[in-house]
Image (cartoon, rainbow, N blue to C red; front, side, top):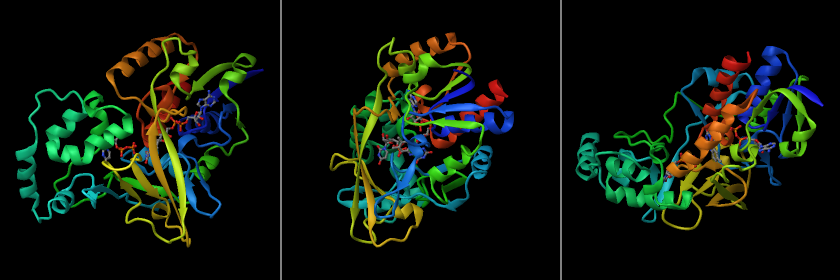
Length: 363
Ligand code: FAD
Ligand code: UDP
C-alpha cells in the first residue's frame, strides 16, 4: 500500500508533525505507533482509584519558547503550575535546585545572597577545562555539595560516575543565589488542564490523520511505500543495529496508592543517597486533584528494554554519529525527536524540532 506521508511514533514529535501535515498542508498522514496509545512518554491516564497518573514518569511542561507554548495552547488549556522539588539530604527535606534556601537549610544558618556567594566561591573547585558533569558540579558548588546532592543521584540515574557523563546533564540543574526555589524558571510553565493524553488526542483529531496503534513499524515496513517518512523511533532500530545497539537508559516505574490524602510535602522528592529509586512523585500535587487516596511513583533507573534517556557519554555520541552518517544517505526520510536524534530533549524542544522540520522541509 502506498502513502504520501508516514510518521513512525505518536509521541509529541510525531503528533506535532502529523498535525502540521494534516491541518496546514491538508494532506493525509498515517501514524504508526507500537504502543496501544498515543502521546509517547507524555501519556497519562486515570488509575483504578480515579487518580490521574503520568504512566512514564512525571512530566512538567516548561518553556521560554512562546511559539511552542502558543502552538500547544491550541490543543489544551493550562493549569498554572510551578514545579518544586525537595531532596532528602542527611535525613532532611531540602529545596532543590541549589539556592539560598538550600544552603540555609543544609547548614542551619541564615546567610544573605552575598554571604552565599562568598561561601560558594570559597568551596568551588577551580577547573580549567570543564569536560564532564562532575567538573560542572565541582566547579559550581564544590566537593561537599557535589557529594550530598549530585554524585550518588547521578550514579543511580545513569549507572556510571558523573566524571564519565557529558556536561549537559548536570548543567540542567541551576545554581541560584536567591530564594527562588522553583525547579524551572521558564516564562511558561503548566500542566495541561485535562491531562497530556487529552491534549495529544486533540492534536490527532483530524480525519486526515490515520492512527495505527499496536503496530511496530518493523512489522509493516516491507508492506508499505511512502513519499515521505518521518521517523521518531530509536535510530539504531531503523538501521537494524548495523553500528551496534545504542545505549539508552531505562527506568522501572513502580506505582503505589496510599490510603491517605497526602504522602509528601512536594510534587517530587529526590533521594540522592538512599534507596534504589531516584525520586518519588505524588501526582495529586501536580494536578490539584481531590481524592481521599493518593498515588505515588518510585523511579528505579536501570538497563531495561524501554529506551527513555539517550546515553550522555562521548562514546555513545560517537556511535550515534555513525548512524547520523547513515541518515544522510536516506532519501525522503526525516529523523525526529528524542529517540531518533538521540538527544535529551524536553517536551518543548521535541515540539520545536517538529515545527522547524515542518517549516524547513515539508511545508
Ligand atoms: P517519545 O515520547 O519517546 O515518542 C516516541 C514514540 O515512538 C513512542 O510512543 C514509541 O512507542 C514510538 N515508537 C518507537 N519505536 C517505534 C516503532 N518501531 N514503531 C512504531 N512506534 C515506535 N520533558 C519535559 O519537558 N518535562 C518533564 O518534566 C519531563 N519529564 C520526563 C520524565 C521522564 C521519566 C522521561 C523519560 C522524559 C521526560 N521528559 C520531560 C521528556 C519528554 O518525555 C520528551 O521530550 C518527549 O516525550 C519527546 O517526544 P518524542 O515524540 O520525541 O519521543
Ligand atoms: N541530578 C542530581 N541530583 C538531583 C537531581 C538531578 O544529581 O537531585 C542530576 C542527575 O544527573 C540528573 C540530571 O541532574 O540526571 C538532570 O536532572 P533532571 O531533574 O533534569 O532529570 P530528568 O527529570 O530529566 O530525569
